Amino acid sequence: MNILVLNCGSSSLKYQVIEICSEKILAKGICDRINLGDSFFIQKTFDNREIKKELKIKNHEQAIDLIIKYLLDKDYGVLNKIEEINAIGHRVLHGGSYFDKPVLIDDRVKIVIKDCFVLGPLHNPNNLAGIEACEKLFSSNIKQVAVFDTAFHQTMQRKVFSYALPYELCKKKSIRRYGFHGTSHEYIANRTCKILNNNNLKIISCHLGNGSSICAIEKLKCIDTTMGMTPIEGLPMGTRCGDIDPGILFFLAKKENMNLDEIDNILNKSSGMLGISGISSDFRDLENEAKKNNKRAKLALEIFCYRTAKYIGAYTVCLGGIDVIVFTAGVGENSTTTRKKICEYLDFAGVKINQEKNNLRGKEVMFSTDESTVKLLVIPTNEELMIARKTKMIINNLRK
Ligand code: AMP
Image 1 (cartoon, rainbow, N blue to C red):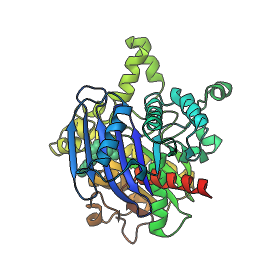
Image 2 (cartoon, protein in one colour; image 1 turned 30 degrees about the vertical axis):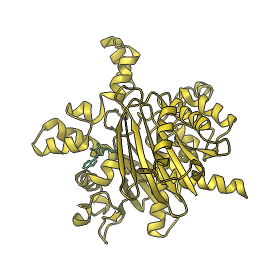
Image 3 (cartoon, rainbow, N blue to C red; image 1 turned 90 degrees about the vertical axis):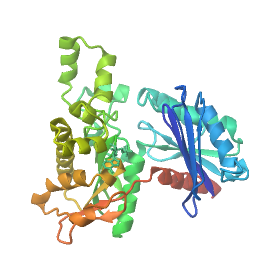
Image 4 (cartoon, rainbow, N blue to C red; image 1 turned 180 degrees about the horizontal axis):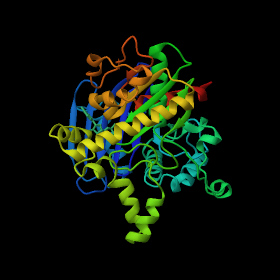
């Protein structure tokens, strides 16, 4: 069974075709800079054929049309006919409180995704555009499944997801913590339990990338996570500020006469690693500058590691103990110095690193010593595979 996995962002569309029984990626690619004038398209296949094109892509429908064309291309493609795609799995950012699992897409589901536009204004409209484009471009027989980034976190208890704001207001306006990166944290939880052959683990999953979040997991269920109603809450990120005193917003509005758009821009686009360092949101740039003794690059990295360790400490309490800490995503998988610095904060609790194993990048590895009180793992995340597995599960249930 071949599953097309689509991740429709605001100006990009990433995709993979996965043969789900063998979990083999047949092709993957991206349409980038959609509707920005200088769009481009890249596709790579399992046997290392690659095509790159610079061309105008106006919208998601055109992008999907292009993807179909190159999946079927006789030189660069992997399919003989479009019917070889058996189902489509869509990453959808926000499912509000409506969805705690993936769903088969029908008119009702589309209405709910639309209802959640207000909660995920940058993503949900594009996710829906992708779904509707597929309805036009594929046969009406093909099933589409929505896999929500928020769904895994729906097991959080009320005391965890509620803000200390007026109760009625929150209820009326659906103001609560939802959490994101759920598909990644769920993949990490499953993989960790498989590697350690135990489903009852207390896991702290650290998804550290351009966007970062931590998730406290017990028995494969989310107990708490750092992102909130929106992805700004929690850790400082590439360009997002993470937790701050909300009083700062009033200060900026009242004392600096900033309007809401300006404040939004600061919090989302010019804070975090970029804001602190004044150099870059990219950890590789910051690590290079830190080596040259750049004070602000060093400060940005120190703040990131300190705040990550602080949340790990907090989540150890929330879980009533901890068995394993897992690092994933661009920084978690590759930045050996970030992992080392974070783990050093936990040295007092008997968390010990095997330096040699920690030097590996982008690979599954256990980098704790045998004596360490907590196991330390690196697991490269695979959200696309998780979406494909869930799509298969829904399709197989339909056939029963
Ligand atoms: P992601 O959002 O998961 O793609 O992660 C992007 C982040 O990972 C960027 O800040 C990159 O600088 C960082 N990253 C990727 N490779 C490395 C590396 N080898 N060392 C340090 N950071 C890295």
